[in-house]
Amino acid sequence: MFVLRSFGKHSAVLKGVAAATLIGLALACTAAQAETDRLLGLILPIKAEKPFKIGVTVVHLNDDFYKGIVYGIEDEAKRSNVQVVQVSVAGGYGNVREQFAQLDAFKTIGVQVAVLAPAAYDGFDPIIQSLKAAGIKVASVGIPVNSKNVDFGVLQDDRSIGAVLADQICKSGPGQKIVATVPGPAGAEWARLRYVAFTDESKKCPSMKVIPGAFGGGLGLQEGMTQTSDILLRDPDVNFIYTPEISLGMGAAQAVKQQNRKVQVISSAMVREAAPLLKDGQILAVVSEPGIIMGRLIVQYAIREMEGKPMPNLQPASAQGLAYPHFDVPSRLITRENVDSHPFNIYEIPPADWQMPAVQ
Image 1 (spheres, rainbow, N blue to C red):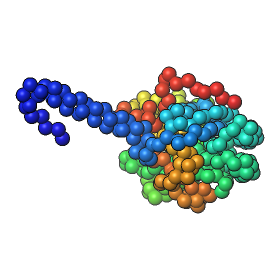
Image 2: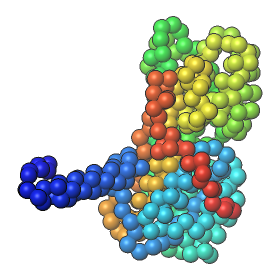
Image 3: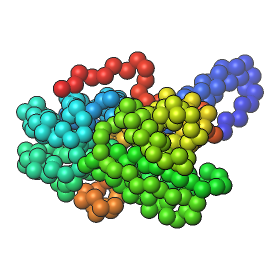
Image 4: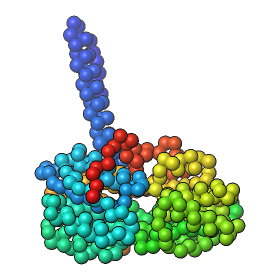
């Protein structure tokens, strides 16, 4: 702490110098805090000593989750002396051939780190092996992939998401909870893990009864509306709907409203459009899926991987059934009580003026 004393005619000057020093320190602390805030203190940000190139391929860009990942990677790369040379899009879950071709193309454009959000859990090991043989490091982001040849991943704990959602319904109040489920697309490992954990956790709650659902269909509002409408027509006792992600959840909420039922939806992957539905009780809770932070962490871990530096906080291979080291970004449960204070711009939604990079 600075103490200002009187030094005659030089006092004002000295006070000015001390004040300037205090302001400089305050600004430095604010800048350091901002650096920490963008990564939530999960890792200390560093810059690459030598620039390198990253290629990215994601499932689609239809929602804020994958847009957030791409934005996080791109923005963190600019801050960190790293170049994103290509962003590719598979076009949807199950489009593995398209993604194989995109990964293969990385070999010809000088990519040194390939970042993969896979369109399916299985089948990627041969192409990942070929990338490794070409000297390219491979990172998985957002959702898991079944390959022991991945160098590292930045993911989220899908089992925890499912369990937290079940617990939230259990604690929602007195009375019987009859929960219908819209499990999500077939072949999506993240959806399966969430559903299994949700149903397992529900067994610990005597007031909960979960009606099994069938995997299938795609994602989106219309899919959620269609499946939920059928459920509500079949079962008049349902008072909760589980969906594994928010586009299905928003569609489910719309179906509930159309049928004028007292049913609450619970889901994952927060979007701004869900905020009013949380406030009026149509949606009970949503788990935030911080795609922006995942993208930033991918770049930070890629720098450390390229430079042979320590990789802090990675869980070892075999943890949670995965065959490669990974970091699970902590999730945040969004409810009516905290939705107004949720920092969308840090967690999952890119700035309004952000321009999506050219994709292939």
